[in-house]
Structure formats: structure tokens, C-alpha cells
Image (cartoon, rainbow, N blue to C red; front, side):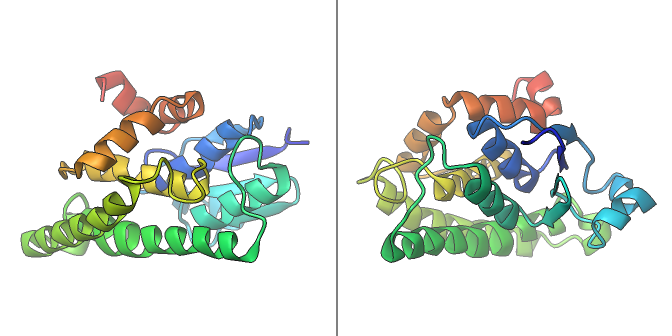
Length: 215
């Protein structure tokens, strides 16, 4: 049962991931669209749920989780996989983990989020155009690695759409927000994934302001 499921957070690629996965699995959930820099994560109510004061956060009955990867793995294992690819053997699970860790570590955390810190959030973390440019080039380097794989595969693992693809797509959107020119295989891949109905529903939920602007 999912009547008591609540997903907190909106407006970021990380908050997008659990919303999208919930939509892919056809789960019923309540959405609390709090933002990361609006003061809403600092309230007593939210801090009691999540002392990290970060988004996203999932409540499912008596349990709660932060961190987008952990939330998505929980949803997949408890309610999935639905139509999503879910590896069952050791090698395939490790291969999916390899891609998820690579995308999160090198593209999300080391590249795009540092660009956010010293670009969008420069008033807090300091203005550093050199850092932003360096991270942009670092992101493009690793996106080219992914593109080299994708040009010969429909999806990242076993030729089927799964969580690794959702991680990648969330970062491709993020890269697009920052104006990065994606390699051609990733442009084609992104256009294909964006046609998924669950992706489109989640995009409307997570990025309502962009939808209003037609972005």
C-alpha cells in the first residue's frame, strides 16, 4: 500500500529521480514541493524528518529515506520493477551499480553540482568562473565516455531501460539547463527517453516553473 507515501522536494535533478521512479511504477504518493534554498528545509517539521535538511526525502509509512539513489533503490526493491529493468545476477547488478556510481560521482557530484555551487549559488559559495568552466569540461569529458557506450546500445545495461538510465537522464537534463552541448548519441538518447509518459508526468511535477516557461 502506498497511501501514506510522501515525496518531499522539487525543482532539482535529484528530487526529480524519486518522483520519476514513482511515476514509472504507478505509485500513489503525496508530493511536498519544497525547494532546496527557500528556507523550507530549515523548518522544525522538516528537520524532525530529515536532520540533513536536504531534498529529496521519502516517507513511506513508518520509514523515511534521504538521498536520491537510496530512495530509488528502496522503491524499486519494494514496489518494482514494473516495466523497468532490474538485474538479478551478480554481474548485471554490479554493472548497473558501476554506471550509477560513475554518473553520480563524476557527472552529478563532481561536475554539475560544483557548477551549481559556484554559478547559481555563488552568493553562498563564492563566484568562480574558472571553477565553473573547469567542471564543464570535466562533465563533457565523462559525458563523452557515456556517449561512446550509448552509440552502440539502446540503454546503459542489458539493452533495457532501468535505474541507471534514469540517473543519466536526470543529469542530461541538468547539463541542458547549463547549456552544455551533448554528444550526438546522447542527444538521440535524451530525445527517446523524454518521450516516456512517466518522464513527462514527473517533469511536470518536479519542474512546474520550467513547464510554464515552455522549457
